[in-house]
Structure formats: C-alpha cells, structure tokens
Length: 331
Image 1 (tube, one colour):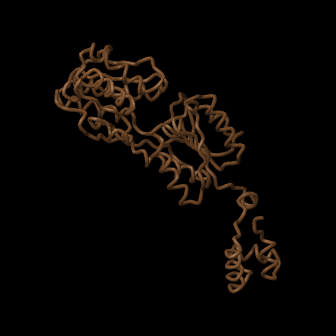
Image 2 (cartoon, rainbow, N blue to C red):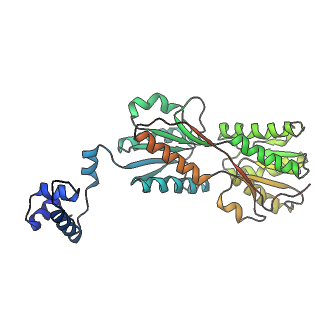
Image 3 (cartoon, rainbow, N blue to C red):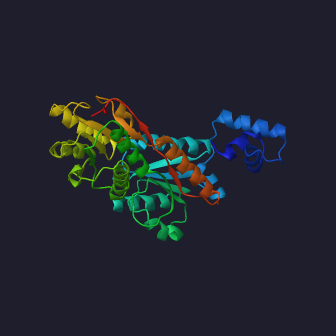
C-alpha cells in the first residue's frame, strides 16, 4: 500500500497536520521537526498525491497537446520544445492524435477538457475558429500551432509560410531557373494557399509569369504519394526546378526521380519545406525551408503559461530560413 501522511505521523509520533505542514515547509513548524519529518518521508517512500494537490490548488499541472499523428516527423521537435518549457515549469504534457480529422480533433479536445487539463495546445488545427465560440464552456486556454482553419481563432504561434515559400523560389531563381513548379497537397488548404502565395509573389518580383501547368495538386491521400505522382506532370510542363509543399512531398518526388532515372539536381532541382530530420538522410540531401520547430513548441508553451497566469498575450509569427543542401544546382 502507498505510504500516507498518517503513516508518517504514526512513526514520527506527531499529528498528521504537523506532517502535512512540515512537508510543505510551513513556517509554524520548527526547522528541526521539518527536516526530521521530510527525511522520514523520504525513507518510507512517501509520494505526494497529485490528485489531492490538484483538488487543493484547483490545478492539475497538466497540459493537453493535440497532434496530427505520432508518425508525422514535423511534430517531433515541436513536442520537444513544448516539453522543455513545460518540464521547467513543473507541468506534464499529455499527447493525443487527431489524424487530420476535424471531428476527431474536437472529440480529443473535449476529452482533454474532461480530464481537467490546465490548458490545451493544438498543432495544425483543422477547426481552430470553433474554439473561440466554445471558450466559455471549455474554460481553459487553447493555443494553436500553425493553425490550418479558416476564420478567426484563439491564440496562435505560426511560421510565416509565404515568406518561407518565397525564400525557396528566390533561391531557385538565383540559380538561373525559370520553369519552376509547385507541388501541393489537398488536405491542408490554408497552408497551401499561404505557401502558394509566397511562390506567386516571388515569381512576380523576379519578373516571371505564373504558369498554371507548373502548379500541381496530385489527388492522393499521403504527402509521399503526392510527390511521387507529381513528377510526371512537372516533366510534361518542362520544369527544371520545383518547390514542394513540405519535405515529405519532396522526398516522394526524389523517390520517383530515382525510379525514372531523373538525375537530381542535374535535371531537376528540388526544394522542400519544414527541414525534418529525414531531409538530411535522403540522396541527395534535400535543400529545404527550415521552420524553427523547436522554437514553435517553446513559444506555444510559454504563451500557454502566460494565459494560465491570467496575462494577456499576442499572436506570434516566426520567420523561416533556407537550408541549402545538394538537391539544387544551377540550371
């Protein structure tokens, strides 16, 4: 059986109230008694009850975090950033998955709320605007990371997708490319629009016209398949380079190039987006737009702590950086 405060009181020969106060360093208990009782508690293997503490403080010291899937390499560093700040503040993080399903995302948020978490962080939300109308009922802070929902929503931390996509296209233009494609996905329309807007803006700044045949949205379930299917349309449009929605799409494209014996970057330069860890392992290593994934998680958790403390916060937009590797070269 777990050791209780009453067990410690019986061995120490004091009241359980004295033990309770000594374990909390209460000033009414002498230093000698406090040290004796704390040492005894450690010897007996006493572990404070988190449930009892949460009832007293009305806090559970837990954060619920909703991610798309644990298989998504994007979330690894984001979760690490959240946990770094959470652990330093003595909070625990509970993970749950939405699988990019809006109904499941809502259900998971409701479940976390019933579990009495102190706040909720949602990555790549599909229903972000819904939480504004539900805030009075949910009654816990909600912070969104890279929100993918339309309309107004709650507090958020996100990267500047348009700026990142523009970096990718500007890099390819600087290498002499003029037939530059874009391969997107269909299940994240808001992010796609922002990245495509950056692509279009950079084309205009370079004095290049937008060619619709170079903008491709393969009808496939997974990002990897989108990249694999997109290659032939790029070749048909005589593209010499391509900006991909993310690194997984780019990796799918590299796989298709290898299968069809298309040399990268000699025949086709490829740029990804996210800078996930596998981007360094593929052949050739992938040039990509790096999201500050660790910082995204850290900022989201810092914002969450401010909201829990009752402070006002402002939404944050973080810049991307270009990471040049071996998948791009002069035309």
